[in-house]
Image 1: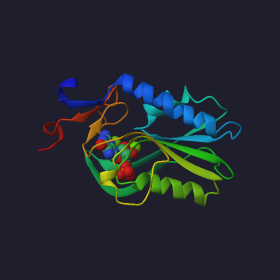
Image 2: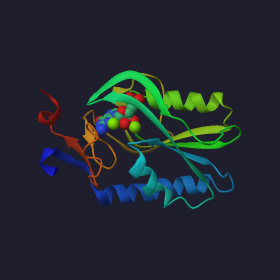
Image 3: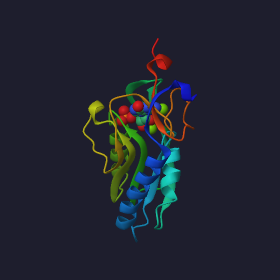
Image 4: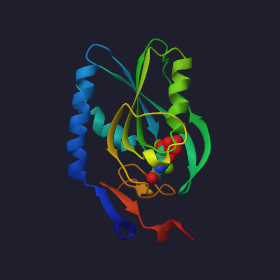
Length: 178
Ligand code: 5GP
Ligand code: MG
Ligand code: MG
């Protein structure tokens, strides 16, 4: 599995350190707000759970499953595969995402939750690839700004593989180009 990785971009230690910083900022902002933390499956699973352990305030957790990728290509179409169990009306919502790429997924979710009456919606993304942006959206809280490469590990997959790598790495092109 590790042989398929061209380069480790963010090691486990770097990620741990950055998550401490991000969680500190959120903890300062969300005291007494009891926000709903929404994790975007499946990629944000590991990021979300590592962040949750560091968030020191009352919160609720829910999940959405959204799909837009096929292999290493963005299809440009966002599909809501599985919806929240919670009502977001009147709630402060924090969306946890693995990576912002074209921006379509987050733009779609932010709009959806606002339309449902959320009091506030912010985005917290482990990674941000701004060179690839196609719609206007900014991550409110971002772990790392990445180069324009196809990344795997720490939740991010290629055909549902490599999610369990403890670091974020660049997948060798030979693995997905043919
Ligand atoms: P969007 O294009 O809507 O901003 O991103 C949609 C989803 O595509 C992300 O949540 C993520 O799951 C996936 N994605 C985008 N860039 C990458 C990447 O470099 N590697 C992997 N594994 N998934 C990506
Ligand atoms: Mg995702
Ligand atoms: Mg994926």
